[in-house]
Each structure stands twice: as structure tokens, then as C-alpha cells.
Image 1 (cartoon, rainbow, N blue to C red):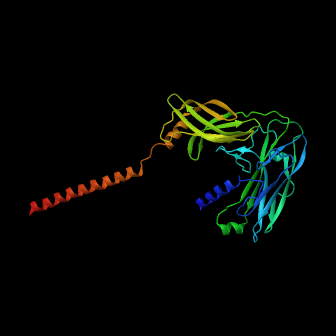
Image 2 (image 1 turned 90 degrees about the vertical axis):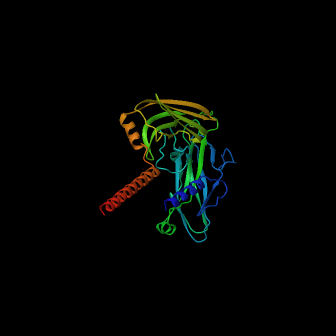
Image 3 (image 1 turned 180 degrees about the vertical axis):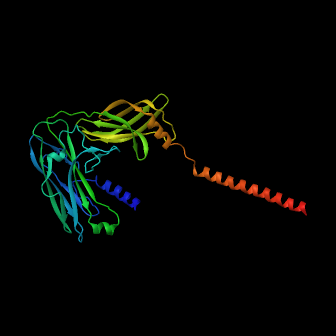
Length: 336
């Protein structure tokens, strides 16, 4: 069951980002955007808008249920763009991803759903969902990024019949910028470095932040931890970082390598088309943290090693039994 849930999550996680101005086939419903008059690029599949201060406008998305027999319920949401720990920009709802403190205008404060946040479409029907966009009252730098999401709501009977909670989901990006504003360059800061546990592994967890209203695309990140007699390195590629967002980058400590307490230097080198950044911070590993890692990740006897010892014990037992039996027979012969 866990495997099926994982497969469903991967399939619909991919479907969620296949957004186009044309209808997209899905398991239960699909969506199509209605182009806005101030769309900057008509060739992209999201709302890429040029706005003016205090501008108010309506954005529209058509939600279609092509099923001739079953109704479908869809939950609507508006969220700011955030960056997850795998270097993927998230435009939809995820309670684990917090909005960065540098974000001045979260999209959810500017874009409101005109109507209920949950809609039900009868079989073979469609419904237009409207949003009211109110641009900031003053000028803003760079871009404001986020998305509108559509997630299928499964009833108890559907969950029982399907056995797993496979949901159709779509997210449409929304990017706002002003015409006369200069291009803003992104930036990378190293907010925090600490020893933590992720997925039962002891890691050096760094929080990287882009505090500027600009995207970073296809970044290569090389992270290193350097001590007196230790150097650990990790490389990540194709990382994308949303404007005004942060994410955690774990550097896993080597399982079979003992860590000594003391002072270490953490360095992250980030290269992208938009720039090159090198950030550094010292981190101290305490005696208790080093002991916890070393005890938890101490080499354990392999199954093969245990089997060899068992076989050796059995062989030794047989040899001893053979000699004792032979000696006993000889003693009987001598007594006769």
C-alpha cells in the first residue's frame, strides 16, 4: 500500500506542473487559463503579467469535468512561491514550506478567489473560477511570484473504492512585475548552520536564502565541511530557487566515519546563470553530538559475518562430537 501511495504521489506531483493554456488531460478533471490582456509573454503557460500600482483586474481559469457519470469536487488555493529542500520551486499549498521573512507581498494577500474555496462540478460540466488581483499601492522591485492550485477532494466512498488517496492536482504560476522597474539580481545568503537529524541520519543542515525578488534557475551547489582532519563534500545540480525564499541543504555525515568534536567551516559555492555566490559559516560540533553520531553509525556485523560464525560453531561442535565419540568407542574396546 505504501508503494502504491508513493507511485500515486509521484504521478500526480508531475501532473501538477503540466500547466498549459490548452486543456490538459487528467484522471478526473482538467484546467485551462483564460489569457489576460496584460500578459507579457503569450507563449508561456502561466500568468506572466505587467501591472501598475493600485491596478485591479480579474484572472480566470476554466475547470472542466469530462466524466459523463461522476461529479468531482475541487479545492482552490492561492500561495506564494517557495523553494523546497530538493531545489524545486513550489507554487501550491504545502504547510511544511514557510514564507520567507524577506517577502514583502505574498501573492495570497494580493490575489483573492471570487467565491467559495471548494467547488463541485456535475458530470460533463465546466465552471469558470475568477480571481481578483489588486496590485500593491506603490512601486515594487523585481517580481512577485506564486500560484493558484486545484486539488481533487476525495469523498469517503471514493477513498474506500480506490483503496489509496490518488488525487488529481494542477498548479498555475502567477508572476507579477512592473514595466518601468530595473532588473533585480538575486542573492544567496547563508542564514544558519546546525547539526540536525534528517531521515534518521546525522547531518550538517544549512539554510540558504534568496532575499531578493528574482529567480535563480539551474544552480549548481557544492557544499563542504572542513575540519582539522575532516573534509566532507556534496554536489547538487539543477536547483531552482524562488524569489524571496529559503530552503534547507543537508550535508550527510559519512556513516562509517567517526566525527570528532570541535570547530568546522561550512562552505556553499553556488553557480547559476544569474550569478556566482560563495557563503561560509563556522559550525561547532559538541562532544555529545559527535558521540551520538559515532555510536549510532558504528559499523554493525554483516549478516554474512554472523552466518560464518554460526557455521564455524557448528563445524567445531561436530569435530568435538566426532573425537569424543571415537574416544568413547576406544575405551569400550579396551575394557573388553
